Amino acid sequence: MDGFRLDQRATNYTAITDYRNQCTLDTCPLSDSYYAYRPSLPANAVFLALFSFSLVCFTLQAVLSRRFVGFTIALVAGCILEVVGYAGRVISYKNPFDQNGFLIQICCLTIAPAFMAAGLYLCLSRIVNTFGRENSRIAPLSYPRIFIPCDIVSLLLQAIGGAMASIASHQNKSSDNGDHIMVAGLAFQVFTLLVFMLLCVDFGVKTLQRMRSMGEQALDPTHAKLRQSWSFKGFLCALSVATVCIFIRSVYRVAELSEGWSGALITNQNLFIGLEGVMVVIAVLLLNAFHPGLCFREGYDLPLRKIKSKNRGNAAAEKRSPSPRSEDGPATTEA
Image 1: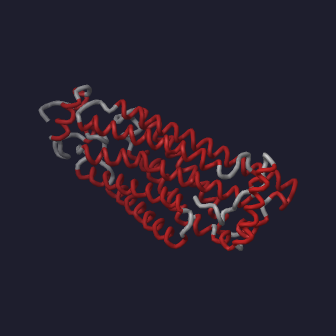
Image 2 (image 1 turned 90 degrees about the horizontal axis):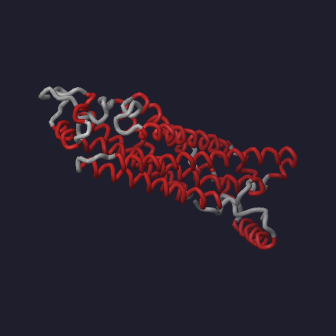
Image 3 (image 1 turned 90 degrees about the vertical axis):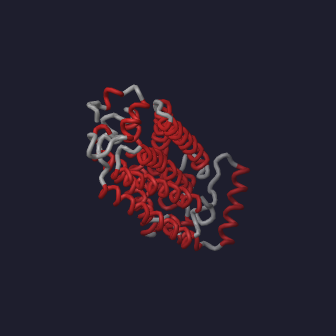
């Protein structure tokens, strides 16, 4: 258009926006679009359909199980943002030079996994209770009390950064400040997930060590039936894979956004599809297949009097000793 190329206007944000507003697929090269490529309609439509399916499943599973309310809210919120984000990318297929579709997807897809991470954090206290709190270095309820606030901080940083970047873009100003805050939020999310995974590994190793030395006495006998169920074992595997997937995706997004909105990573569609879309969709579908509200059902069959008696004993033990024996199990603790 008029012989100009976008890189010649790199510091003139008003001129860049005006240039793109006049662009079409026929008049401007894709390298001058917000993506530097044309978003794949088939790939984004598939992701849109899969996250919509997952959203419906989480909603139905919440109605059926009526358990793990916090987990369900977190995953439903994350899936809603994924659906909106991929709708933005589908819109951008028609016109990758349009700013609105680009901002919708970058804001929604950036913060969505922060909600999903919160759902993961809420599950660990249930798992610790199921095996026995003596196998954990910290009390079961300390896990959500530590990690949920961290996740909120990460989410707020990403949301504030995304809002600042969006406002700056609409005002034809540099979005660098907002980008930096988003990256800080993502980096903090990566750090939080890493600590979470290390504590999970530590809990698993300590449990195995105590089982080798003490046998079944190392485990809470109340939930022996639950631990032996295939659904619970499947849930443990699903949660592990989902956590790793969210972690890989978060590391990728830190590296991607650290380069700004025109770096080598963010302009590579194949990397985005593989390390963003595929990673997150694997995580949510696994958690659909092994929803904790359904996989913990056998833990809900415990007689209520037995649970209350155990909880009263735990409360008394906590008053007498700095290292209490047990806390209420998965049948009574709601996330």
